[in-house]
Length: 347
Image (cartoon, rainbow, N blue to C red; front, side):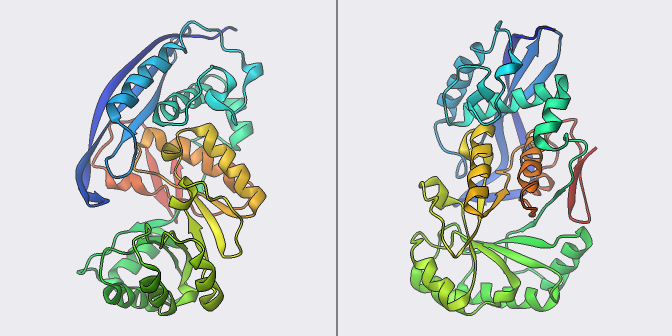
């Protein structure tokens, strides 16, 4: 049976957050983006997302939209030869599209939806399940404020079944954050670990003080607390804390380090499903965890990130950062992710 795409259209979307979110000091009440809609010669309709949140995603959103329009025309009226399919190559080696930005992410997300819909066995064999059958352990996500009740927070995390929780740091004073972490540690009573995310907000001196005064046994890892990655080795030697890279990866720092436990991979920021798969494979070679994480994409896209997490977890299982869907009021999709006992599933 021959397949080819006959139509490509793009429509905007706006989705409200349950409460305002702040990224790099920019306040957001909602997010905007575009859906790429592809139709094949058998009337199958699939979607890919072109997300954009200022302070998270880079590039000019209007330029990205124009590039998506150009790229989508390259998909039309060309026979899809699945013998060439290679998930580790740009546009899965089916179309000649060389790019590493958000437009490619939208196209590859749509292609992934199409493959799952029309050739489910290919999808299942590579990703070790489809979006309806994969079960992904996820970490919680917590952004501290001065009014937080540690006892209620930990009780909520336990109720949801989280084993790890990502905690954003660097927004309160060091004293306030140390006090909160110690209170959370005492309430958790060894049942939960936290992953601290500093977004490189600390100076070397401030973070050194901070690191020496937190309960190390409570910390799974600390993600990019400072810009100076070399200084992390000194901190590791003195505290035995482990670290993770996110911003450092974007600077091209893939060097294997004794203090490094994980890479945090956000596929839409890396600009493609194929590039993310390459990163997962490289992480495996480096013997670090690849923690697949969402940059507040819609539930439509979240199922693709769950597939990537399923691919990563066949090598070494870890909690992934896919709990962001609960921040939206409604993303107007048919996907219905559920969270039970710390496990993300789609129904």
